[in-house]
Structures are given as C-alpha cells and as structure tokens.
Amino acid sequence: MLATELKTGRIFKDNGQPFLVVRYEHIKSARGGANVKVKAKNLLTGAVLEKSYLSSARVEDADVMRKNAQYLYKDNGYVFMDPGTYEQITIPADVVGDNAKYLMEGENVIVMYFEGRPVSIDLPNSLIFEVTYTEPGFKGNTVSNVLKEATVNNGTTVKVPTFIKIGDKIKVDTRTGEYLSKA
Image (cartoon, rainbow, N blue to C red):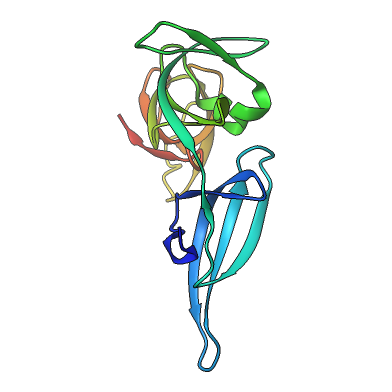
C-alpha cells in the first residue's frame, strides 16, 4: 500500500515488525515532494517511533488477524477464551500491558494476532465499574474539578468527583483511565 494510506489506527509492517499508526501527518513542501510522517507503536516491543516516508513510497500491509475473546482469569499470564470454539489461550502480561487494570472476568475483548501469535488486546473505549471504596465527600466541598480516589470492583483506583459514593456505578475511559460519568 502507499504511505499516504497510513491513517490513524492502520497496521503496517516495517522491517518484518508490525506497527500501529498512532498519529498521521501529511506534509507538503513548496518545491519538494510531499512527505508522510507517522508516529507508530511497535506491536511486538511496545516502542513508539516516529517514521517518515515519501508520499510515493510503498509500505507493506501487515497480516493481522482480530478475534473476539472473553477474559477468564489471571494465572501465569492472562487466560482468554474464544467464544466460538471454547479454546483457551494464555497471553503474557507484557502483551496485555496497561489494559490489565481494566480487565474483569467475563469481559469481551478483541485479541490481535500477528503471524499466529497474540500481540495486543483491544478493550472497549469505556467500561462500567462499581465503586467498592471511596472516602465520603464533605458538605461544602463543591468547588469544580475537585476529585478524590475511588477503588472499583476489579481493584483499580480511579479519580472521581466528590459526589460519588460506595456502590455507585461509574463509566471509565479505558484509553486514559479517567472518570467519564455515572452509569
């Protein structure tokens, strides 16, 4: 494929390694040709690199397969099940990465495979959690943007507004870890 087809979220192969485009920028100079600059995350190592290509350059399309999976439990890694075949796979902790703090038993995710081995998991953009512990909010403490720590039902800590109480269900953005709203 042409380098101009490298849009955000696209996966391509460079030097035999799969890369996910995090940011895409097309730069046109007055006399010279156009360039494509991408910020790309290596799916095998997790390293984020800046790459530059001529707009006429070709890059190799990565053969990445996506499969639905359901999270079961943590053992020597994270165990997922294919809902169609009931086959279980164990994904190492370094592949799951920061997504581990948002995993709950029974949660559906998408597992990305590169050349037959899992390289990353995609969670939904937001998930609903129940608050299991938080300090009480104090009357008069209503200044905007005042946040307190809350522990949710999978053990993760999230900053929430002061009106959130134990037992409330909240929506959390899994990309940033921020509180979005009450659920």
